[in-house]
Image (tube, rainbow, N blue to C red):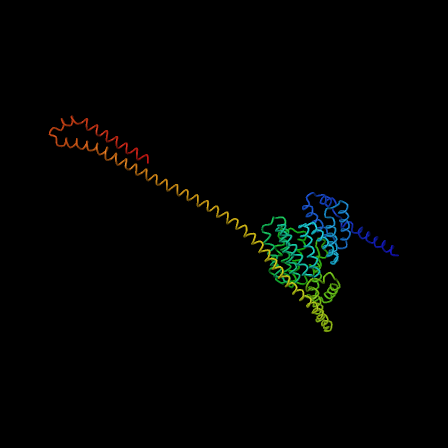
Length: 490
Protein backbone atom coordinates (compact mmCIF):
# COMPACT_ATOMS: atom_id res chain seq x y z
CA UNK A 1 0.00 0.00 0.00
CA UNK A 2 2.78 2.42 0.96
CA UNK A 3 4.69 1.55 -2.22
CA UNK A 4 1.59 2.36 -4.29
CA UNK A 5 1.32 5.71 -2.49
CA UNK A 6 4.95 6.57 -3.32
CA UNK A 7 4.37 5.59 -6.95
CA UNK A 8 1.23 7.76 -7.06
CA UNK A 9 3.09 10.75 -5.57
CA UNK A 10 5.95 10.29 -8.03
CA UNK A 11 3.48 10.05 -10.91
CA UNK A 12 1.69 13.25 -9.79
CA UNK A 13 5.06 15.03 -9.50
CA UNK A 14 6.13 13.92 -12.97
CA UNK A 15 2.73 14.88 -14.41
CA UNK A 16 2.91 18.31 -12.79
CA UNK A 17 6.41 18.90 -14.20
CA UNK A 18 5.20 17.74 -17.63
CA UNK A 19 2.28 20.17 -17.48
CA UNK A 20 4.67 23.01 -16.66
CA UNK A 21 7.45 21.92 -19.01
CA UNK A 22 7.07 24.89 -21.33
CA UNK A 23 6.62 27.38 -18.51
CA UNK A 24 9.73 26.28 -16.58
CA UNK A 25 12.05 25.77 -19.54
CA UNK A 26 15.62 26.62 -18.53
CA UNK A 27 18.23 27.87 -20.96
CA UNK A 28 20.55 24.92 -20.40
CA UNK A 29 23.23 26.18 -22.79
CA UNK A 30 23.55 29.40 -20.80
CA UNK A 31 23.60 27.53 -17.50
CA UNK A 32 26.26 25.08 -18.72
CA UNK A 33 28.35 28.02 -19.98
CA UNK A 34 28.08 29.60 -16.52
CA UNK A 35 29.08 26.38 -14.75
CA UNK A 36 32.13 26.01 -17.01
CA UNK A 37 33.22 29.64 -16.48
CA UNK A 38 36.88 29.69 -15.38
CA UNK A 39 36.83 32.85 -13.25
CA UNK A 40 35.13 31.79 -10.01
CA UNK A 41 33.81 35.19 -8.92
CA UNK A 42 32.34 35.92 -12.37
CA UNK A 43 30.82 32.43 -12.39
CA UNK A 44 29.20 32.93 -8.98
CA UNK A 45 27.77 36.34 -9.90
CA UNK A 46 26.30 35.03 -13.16
CA UNK A 47 24.86 31.95 -11.46
CA UNK A 48 23.21 33.94 -8.65
CA UNK A 49 21.61 36.24 -11.27
CA UNK A 50 20.49 33.23 -13.33
CA UNK A 51 18.83 31.47 -10.38
CA UNK A 52 17.13 34.62 -9.08
CA UNK A 53 15.90 35.60 -12.53
CA UNK A 54 14.44 32.14 -13.12
CA UNK A 55 12.47 32.00 -9.87
CA UNK A 56 11.30 35.60 -10.21
CA UNK A 57 9.57 34.70 -13.47
CA UNK A 58 8.34 31.16 -12.78
CA UNK A 59 4.95 30.59 -11.16
CA UNK A 60 4.87 28.95 -7.69
CA UNK A 61 3.52 25.63 -9.00
CA UNK A 62 6.43 25.40 -11.46
CA UNK A 63 9.15 26.22 -8.93
CA UNK A 64 9.66 22.65 -7.69
CA UNK A 65 10.27 21.27 -11.18
CA UNK A 66 12.64 24.11 -11.99
CA UNK A 67 14.55 23.48 -8.77
CA UNK A 68 15.01 19.80 -9.65
CA UNK A 69 16.24 20.67 -13.15
CA UNK A 70 18.79 23.17 -11.85
CA UNK A 71 20.14 20.83 -9.15
CA UNK A 72 20.36 18.02 -11.70
CA UNK A 73 22.55 20.19 -13.95
CA UNK A 74 24.71 21.24 -10.96
CA UNK A 75 25.41 17.56 -10.27
CA UNK A 76 25.88 16.56 -13.90
CA UNK A 77 28.50 19.23 -14.65
CA UNK A 78 30.13 19.13 -11.20
CA UNK A 79 29.54 22.75 -10.25
CA UNK A 80 32.12 24.20 -7.78
CA UNK A 81 30.41 25.08 -4.46
CA UNK A 82 27.72 22.63 -5.64
CA UNK A 83 26.29 22.01 -2.15
CA UNK A 84 26.05 25.71 -1.34
CA UNK A 85 24.24 26.50 -4.60
CA UNK A 86 21.99 23.44 -4.25
CA UNK A 87 20.78 24.65 -0.85
CA UNK A 88 20.45 28.20 -2.18
CA UNK A 89 18.26 26.94 -5.05
CA UNK A 90 16.14 24.85 -2.68
CA UNK A 91 15.69 27.88 -0.44
CA UNK A 92 14.63 30.20 -3.28
CA UNK A 93 12.21 27.54 -4.54
CA UNK A 94 10.70 27.03 -1.07
CA UNK A 95 10.34 30.80 -0.65
CA UNK A 96 8.53 30.98 -3.99
CA UNK A 97 6.00 28.40 -2.72
CA UNK A 98 5.64 30.27 0.63
CA UNK A 99 7.34 27.49 2.62
CA UNK A 100 9.33 29.98 4.67
CA UNK A 101 10.59 27.55 7.31
CA UNK A 102 12.15 25.26 4.69
CA UNK A 103 13.50 28.32 2.85
CA UNK A 104 15.22 29.52 6.04
CA UNK A 105 16.69 26.07 6.81
CA UNK A 106 18.25 25.67 3.36
CA UNK A 107 19.60 29.24 3.33
CA UNK A 108 21.26 28.72 6.70
CA UNK A 109 22.98 25.62 5.27
CA UNK A 110 24.19 27.66 2.30
CA UNK A 111 25.61 30.28 4.68
CA UNK A 112 27.46 27.64 6.73
CA UNK A 113 29.02 26.19 3.56
CA UNK A 114 30.06 29.64 2.27
CA UNK A 115 31.53 30.51 5.68
CA UNK A 116 33.62 27.33 5.66
CA UNK A 117 35.17 28.51 2.39
CA UNK A 118 35.48 32.11 3.62
CA UNK A 119 33.66 33.27 0.48
CA UNK A 120 32.63 36.91 1.08
CA UNK A 121 30.58 37.29 -2.10
CA UNK A 122 28.44 34.19 -1.48
CA UNK A 123 28.06 35.13 2.20
CA UNK A 124 26.82 38.57 1.17
CA UNK A 125 24.24 37.07 -1.22
CA UNK A 126 23.08 34.28 1.09
CA UNK A 127 22.79 36.54 4.16
CA UNK A 128 20.81 39.10 2.14
CA UNK A 129 18.35 36.41 1.02
CA UNK A 130 18.10 35.06 4.55
CA UNK A 131 17.06 38.58 5.60
CA UNK A 132 14.27 38.57 2.97
CA UNK A 133 12.95 35.28 4.33
CA UNK A 134 13.13 36.43 7.96
CA UNK A 135 11.38 39.70 7.07
CA UNK A 136 8.53 37.73 5.45
CA UNK A 137 8.38 35.60 8.60
CA UNK A 138 7.99 38.73 10.71
CA UNK A 139 11.32 37.97 12.41
CA UNK A 140 12.68 41.51 12.23
CA UNK A 141 15.40 40.93 14.83
CA UNK A 142 16.75 37.99 12.83
CA UNK A 143 16.44 39.95 9.59
CA UNK A 144 18.41 42.92 10.85
CA UNK A 145 21.11 40.68 12.29
CA UNK A 146 21.47 39.05 8.86
CA UNK A 147 21.61 42.50 7.22
CA UNK A 148 24.32 43.56 9.65
CA UNK A 149 26.38 40.49 8.78
CA UNK A 150 25.79 41.06 5.05
CA UNK A 151 26.89 44.68 5.39
CA UNK A 152 30.22 43.56 6.87
CA UNK A 153 30.76 41.30 3.85
CA UNK A 154 29.85 44.19 1.52
CA UNK A 155 32.45 46.38 3.23
CA UNK A 156 35.10 43.66 2.81
CA UNK A 157 34.17 43.42 -0.90
CA UNK A 158 34.54 47.24 -1.15
CA UNK A 159 31.50 47.46 -3.46
CA UNK A 160 29.28 50.57 -3.19
CA UNK A 161 26.50 48.92 -5.20
CA UNK A 162 26.16 46.12 -2.62
CA UNK A 163 26.05 48.69 0.20
CA UNK A 164 23.34 50.66 -1.60
CA UNK A 165 21.35 47.49 -2.25
CA UNK A 166 21.46 46.60 1.45
CA UNK A 167 20.11 50.05 2.33
CA UNK A 168 17.23 49.46 -0.10
CA UNK A 169 16.52 46.12 1.59
CA UNK A 170 16.65 47.68 5.07
CA UNK A 171 14.24 50.37 3.87
CA UNK A 172 11.83 47.57 2.89
CA UNK A 173 11.99 46.25 6.45
CA UNK A 174 11.03 49.69 7.78
CA UNK A 175 8.26 49.91 5.19
CA UNK A 176 6.79 46.61 6.32
CA UNK A 177 6.97 47.84 9.92
CA UNK A 178 5.02 51.00 8.89
CA UNK A 179 7.99 53.32 9.58
CA UNK A 180 7.68 55.10 6.26
CA UNK A 181 9.88 58.13 6.93
CA UNK A 182 12.75 55.90 8.04
CA UNK A 183 12.23 53.76 4.96
CA UNK A 184 12.50 56.82 2.71
CA UNK A 185 15.64 57.95 4.59
CA UNK A 186 17.37 54.65 3.76
CA UNK A 187 16.28 54.96 0.12
CA UNK A 188 17.81 58.45 0.04
CA UNK A 189 20.98 57.04 1.60
CA UNK A 190 21.13 54.35 -1.10
CA UNK A 191 20.76 56.99 -3.83
CA UNK A 192 23.61 59.00 -2.31
CA UNK A 193 25.90 55.94 -2.35
CA UNK A 194 24.94 55.28 -5.99
CA UNK A 195 26.29 58.64 -7.17
CA UNK A 196 29.72 57.05 -7.73
CA UNK A 197 28.29 53.88 -9.31
CA UNK A 198 28.48 52.96 -13.00
CA UNK A 199 25.46 53.58 -15.23
CA UNK A 200 24.27 49.97 -15.79
CA UNK A 201 23.68 48.75 -12.23
CA UNK A 202 22.86 52.29 -11.08
CA UNK A 203 19.89 52.65 -13.47
CA UNK A 204 18.34 49.36 -12.38
CA UNK A 205 18.60 50.07 -8.66
CA UNK A 206 17.40 53.66 -9.12
CA UNK A 207 14.21 52.26 -10.68
CA UNK A 208 13.63 50.06 -7.61
CA UNK A 209 14.27 53.05 -5.33
CA UNK A 210 11.71 55.15 -7.23
CA UNK A 211 9.11 52.42 -6.98
CA UNK A 212 9.78 51.81 -3.26
CA UNK A 213 9.40 55.52 -2.58
CA UNK A 214 6.07 55.38 -4.43
CA UNK A 215 4.92 52.56 -2.14
CA UNK A 216 5.87 54.58 0.95
CA UNK A 217 4.09 57.71 -0.28
CA UNK A 218 0.99 55.66 -1.10
CA UNK A 219 0.92 54.28 2.45
CA UNK A 220 1.43 57.82 3.77
CA UNK A 221 -1.47 58.97 1.53
CA UNK A 222 0.76 61.64 0.04
CA UNK A 223 -0.81 62.10 -3.40
CA UNK A 224 1.56 64.82 -4.67
CA UNK A 225 4.77 62.91 -3.87
CA UNK A 226 3.30 59.70 -5.27
CA UNK A 227 2.45 61.55 -8.50
CA UNK A 228 6.05 62.82 -8.76
CA UNK A 229 7.50 59.31 -8.51
CA UNK A 230 4.81 57.80 -10.76
CA UNK A 231 5.97 60.29 -13.42
CA UNK A 232 9.61 59.40 -12.76
CA UNK A 233 8.78 55.72 -13.32
CA UNK A 234 7.40 56.75 -16.71
CA UNK A 235 10.82 57.99 -17.78
CA UNK A 236 12.63 55.93 -20.43
CA UNK A 237 15.82 55.79 -18.30
CA UNK A 238 14.25 53.15 -16.00
CA UNK A 239 15.70 49.63 -16.19
CA UNK A 240 13.71 46.80 -14.62
CA UNK A 241 11.83 43.73 -15.81
CA UNK A 242 8.98 44.94 -13.55
CA UNK A 243 8.78 48.50 -14.90
CA UNK A 244 5.48 47.74 -16.69
CA UNK A 245 4.06 46.50 -13.38
CA UNK A 246 5.42 49.49 -11.43
CA UNK A 247 3.81 51.99 -13.80
CA UNK A 248 0.38 50.32 -13.79
CA UNK A 249 0.36 49.74 -10.03
CA UNK A 250 1.24 53.34 -9.13
CA UNK A 251 -1.43 54.46 -11.62
CA UNK A 252 -4.22 52.73 -9.68
CA UNK A 253 -2.62 53.92 -6.40
CA UNK A 254 -3.24 57.47 -7.65
CA UNK A 255 -6.87 56.63 -8.41
CA UNK A 256 -7.33 55.25 -4.87
CA UNK A 257 -5.79 58.33 -3.21
CA UNK A 258 -7.85 60.61 -5.42
CA UNK A 259 -11.02 58.81 -4.33
CA UNK A 260 -11.82 57.65 -7.85
CA UNK A 261 -12.85 54.14 -6.74
CA UNK A 262 -14.78 52.98 -9.84
CA UNK A 263 -11.68 53.65 -12.00
CA UNK A 264 -9.43 51.97 -9.42
CA UNK A 265 -11.63 48.83 -9.49
CA UNK A 266 -11.46 48.73 -13.31
CA UNK A 267 -7.69 49.22 -13.27
CA UNK A 268 -7.05 46.43 -10.74
CA UNK A 269 -9.33 43.99 -12.57
CA UNK A 270 -7.60 44.81 -15.86
CA UNK A 271 -4.21 44.04 -14.27
CA UNK A 272 -5.33 40.53 -13.36
CA UNK A 273 -5.85 39.84 -17.07
CA UNK A 274 -2.53 41.43 -18.12
CA UNK A 275 0.01 38.70 -18.92
CA UNK A 276 2.94 41.13 -18.53
CA UNK A 277 1.81 42.29 -15.10
CA UNK A 278 3.56 40.73 -12.05
CA UNK A 279 0.83 40.42 -9.43
CA UNK A 280 1.27 41.44 -5.80
CA UNK A 281 -0.31 39.84 -2.72
CA UNK A 282 -1.72 43.24 -1.75
CA UNK A 283 -3.67 43.70 -5.01
CA UNK A 284 -6.78 41.99 -3.62
CA UNK A 285 -6.59 44.02 -0.41
CA UNK A 286 -6.58 47.23 -2.40
CA UNK A 287 -9.46 45.92 -4.50
CA UNK A 288 -11.42 45.14 -1.32
CA UNK A 289 -10.77 48.69 -0.07
CA UNK A 290 -12.00 50.10 -3.38
CA UNK A 291 -15.15 47.94 -3.24
CA UNK A 292 -15.86 49.14 0.30
CA UNK A 293 -15.28 52.82 -0.57
CA UNK A 294 -17.50 52.37 -3.63
CA UNK A 295 -20.23 50.91 -1.37
CA UNK A 296 -19.98 47.41 -2.91
CA UNK A 297 -20.09 45.82 0.54
CA UNK A 298 -20.76 42.19 -0.41
CA UNK A 299 -17.91 42.13 -2.93
CA UNK A 300 -15.58 43.69 -0.34
CA UNK A 301 -16.63 41.19 2.37
CA UNK A 302 -16.18 38.16 0.09
CA UNK A 303 -12.70 39.28 -0.93
CA UNK A 304 -11.62 40.07 2.65
CA UNK A 305 -12.73 36.64 3.88
CA UNK A 306 -10.70 35.00 1.10
CA UNK A 307 -7.66 37.05 2.10
CA UNK A 308 -7.97 36.06 5.75
CA UNK A 309 -7.91 32.38 4.76
CA UNK A 310 -4.71 32.93 2.74
CA UNK A 311 -1.83 32.37 5.18
CA UNK A 312 0.78 33.86 2.83
CA UNK A 313 -0.32 37.38 3.72
CA UNK A 314 -0.42 37.23 7.52
CA UNK A 315 3.18 38.31 8.12
CA UNK A 316 2.91 41.78 6.64
CA UNK A 317 2.41 44.38 9.40
CA UNK A 318 -1.09 45.81 9.67
CA UNK A 319 -2.63 43.56 7.00
CA UNK A 320 -4.70 41.35 9.27
CA UNK A 321 -5.50 44.32 11.50
CA UNK A 322 -6.68 46.25 8.46
CA UNK A 323 -8.75 43.34 7.09
CA UNK A 324 -10.58 42.71 10.37
CA UNK A 325 -11.15 46.43 10.76
CA UNK A 326 -12.61 46.51 7.23
CA UNK A 327 -14.95 43.60 8.05
CA UNK A 328 -16.05 45.46 11.19
CA UNK A 329 -16.79 48.61 9.16
CA UNK A 330 -18.78 46.54 6.62
CA UNK A 331 -20.82 44.99 9.47
CA UNK A 332 -21.37 48.47 10.92
CA UNK A 333 -22.75 49.71 7.60
CA UNK A 334 -25.04 46.71 7.43
CA UNK A 335 -26.24 47.30 11.00
CA UNK A 336 -24.78 44.04 12.37
CA UNK A 337 -23.37 45.31 15.67
CA UNK A 338 -22.44 41.85 17.03
CA UNK A 339 -20.33 40.90 13.99
CA UNK A 340 -18.76 44.36 13.99
CA UNK A 341 -17.78 43.98 17.66
CA UNK A 342 -16.22 40.55 17.06
CA UNK A 343 -14.21 41.84 14.13
CA UNK A 344 -13.06 44.90 16.08
CA UNK A 345 -11.93 42.49 18.80
CA UNK A 346 -9.89 40.50 16.26
CA UNK A 347 -8.48 43.75 14.89
CA UNK A 348 -7.43 44.81 18.39
CA UNK A 349 -5.63 41.49 18.88
CA UNK A 350 -3.62 42.02 15.70
CA UNK A 351 -3.01 45.66 16.66
CA UNK A 352 -1.27 44.45 19.83
CA UNK A 353 0.92 42.14 17.74
CA UNK A 354 1.77 45.04 15.46
CA UNK A 355 2.72 47.18 18.45
CA UNK A 356 5.08 44.43 19.63
CA UNK A 357 6.67 44.42 16.20
CA UNK A 358 7.01 48.19 16.24
CA UNK A 359 8.82 47.93 19.59
CA UNK A 360 11.08 45.33 18.01
CA UNK A 361 11.77 47.68 15.12
CA UNK A 362 12.73 50.38 17.61
CA UNK A 363 15.41 48.05 18.96
CA UNK A 364 16.43 47.27 15.40
CA UNK A 365 16.75 50.98 14.65
CA UNK A 366 19.14 51.35 17.58
CA UNK A 367 21.21 48.40 16.37
CA UNK A 368 21.42 49.84 12.88
CA UNK A 369 22.50 53.23 14.19
CA UNK A 370 25.19 51.59 16.34
CA UNK A 371 26.45 49.69 13.29
CA UNK A 372 26.38 52.81 11.14
CA UNK A 373 28.24 54.78 13.83
CA UNK A 374 30.82 52.00 14.09
CA UNK A 375 31.17 51.87 10.31
CA UNK A 376 31.44 55.66 10.18
CA UNK A 377 34.13 55.58 12.90
CA UNK A 378 36.14 52.99 10.95
CA UNK A 379 35.81 55.01 7.76
CA UNK A 380 36.85 58.20 9.53
CA UNK A 381 39.81 56.43 11.11
CA UNK A 382 40.92 55.27 7.67
CA UNK A 383 40.35 58.76 6.32
CA UNK A 384 42.38 60.19 9.24
CA UNK A 385 45.26 57.82 8.40
CA UNK A 386 45.17 58.93 4.78
CA UNK A 387 44.98 62.58 5.79
CA UNK A 388 47.91 62.07 8.17
CA UNK A 389 50.04 60.62 5.39
CA UNK A 390 49.08 63.53 3.13
CA UNK A 391 49.91 65.96 5.94
CA UNK A 392 53.36 64.40 6.43
CA UNK A 393 53.91 64.50 2.68
CA UNK A 394 52.73 68.14 2.58
CA UNK A 395 55.07 69.11 5.47
CA UNK A 396 58.03 67.45 3.70
CA UNK A 397 57.20 69.19 0.43
CA UNK A 398 56.72 72.51 2.27
CA UNK A 399 60.10 72.07 4.02
CA UNK A 400 61.77 71.38 0.69
CA UNK A 401 60.10 74.44 -0.84
CA UNK A 402 61.21 76.62 2.11
CA UNK A 403 64.78 75.27 1.79
CA UNK A 404 64.74 75.95 -1.94
CA UNK A 405 63.39 79.47 -1.39
CA UNK A 406 66.09 80.04 1.28
CA UNK A 407 68.82 78.94 -1.12
CA UNK A 408 67.41 81.10 -3.89
CA UNK A 409 67.21 84.09 -1.51
CA UNK A 410 70.76 83.47 -0.27
CA UNK A 411 72.10 83.22 -3.81
CA UNK A 412 70.26 86.39 -4.72
CA UNK A 413 71.63 88.20 -1.71
CA UNK A 414 75.18 87.08 -2.49
CA UNK A 415 74.69 88.11 -6.10
CA UNK A 416 73.51 91.56 -5.03
CA UNK A 417 76.50 91.83 -2.64
CA UNK A 418 78.95 90.97 -5.42
CA UNK A 419 77.18 93.31 -7.79
CA UNK A 420 77.44 96.03 -5.18
CA UNK A 421 81.19 95.41 -4.79
CA UNK A 422 81.59 95.38 -8.55
CA UNK A 423 79.61 98.60 -8.85
CA UNK A 424 81.80 100.24 -6.17
CA UNK A 425 84.92 99.09 -8.01
CA UNK A 426 83.58 100.43 -11.28
CA UNK A 427 82.59 103.68 -9.67
CA UNK A 428 86.09 104.14 -8.22
CA UNK A 429 87.60 103.34 -11.60
CA UNK A 430 85.28 105.80 -13.36
CA UNK A 431 86.01 108.43 -10.72
CA UNK A 432 89.73 107.90 -11.32
CA UNK A 433 89.30 108.25 -15.08
CA UNK A 434 87.13 111.29 -14.59
CA UNK A 435 89.55 113.03 -12.21
CA UNK A 436 92.84 112.08 -13.85
CA UNK A 437 92.14 111.83 -17.52
CA UNK A 438 88.96 113.71 -18.42
CA UNK A 439 89.70 116.68 -16.18
CA UNK A 440 93.37 116.66 -17.26
CA UNK A 441 92.48 116.95 -20.95
CA UNK A 442 89.68 119.35 -20.26
CA UNK A 443 92.05 121.52 -18.19
CA UNK A 444 94.55 121.55 -21.10
CA UNK A 445 91.77 122.67 -23.49
CA UNK A 446 90.55 125.32 -21.09
CA UNK A 447 94.17 126.58 -20.60
CA UNK A 448 94.69 126.84 -24.37
CA UNK A 449 91.36 128.64 -24.73
CA UNK A 450 92.37 131.05 -21.97
CA UNK A 451 95.68 131.83 -23.78
CA UNK A 452 93.75 132.60 -26.96
CA UNK A 453 91.32 134.73 -25.07
CA UNK A 454 94.06 137.02 -23.69
CA UNK A 455 96.25 137.00 -26.84
CA UNK A 456 96.81 140.20 -28.84
CA UNK A 457 97.29 138.28 -32.06
CA UNK A 458 94.71 135.48 -31.87
CA UNK A 459 95.29 134.13 -35.36
CA UNK A 460 99.01 133.74 -34.94
CA UNK A 461 98.61 132.30 -31.48
CA UNK A 462 95.94 129.87 -32.70
CA UNK A 463 98.18 128.58 -35.46
CA UNK A 464 100.88 127.85 -32.91
CA UNK A 465 98.58 126.00 -30.42
CA UNK A 466 96.11 124.35 -32.84
CA UNK A 467 98.01 121.06 -32.75
CA UNK A 468 97.98 120.98 -28.93
CA UNK A 469 94.28 121.80 -28.89
CA UNK A 470 93.43 119.02 -31.33
CA UNK A 471 95.54 116.49 -29.40
CA UNK A 472 93.88 117.42 -26.07
CA UNK A 473 90.39 117.17 -27.65
CA UNK A 474 91.23 113.70 -29.12
CA UNK A 475 92.46 112.46 -25.77
CA UNK A 476 89.32 113.85 -24.09
CA UNK A 477 87.14 112.04 -26.63
CA UNK A 478 89.05 108.79 -26.02
CA UNK A 479 88.56 109.13 -22.27
CA UNK A 480 84.80 109.72 -22.70
CA UNK A 481 84.51 106.62 -24.93
CA UNK A 482 86.38 104.61 -22.31
CA UNK A 483 83.86 105.73 -19.68
CA UNK A 484 80.96 104.84 -22.01
CA UNK A 485 82.31 101.33 -22.63
CA UNK A 486 82.69 100.70 -18.90
CA UNK A 487 79.11 101.89 -18.30
CA UNK A 488 77.87 99.48 -20.96
CA UNK A 489 79.67 96.66 -19.18
CA UNK A 490 77.32 97.15 -16.21
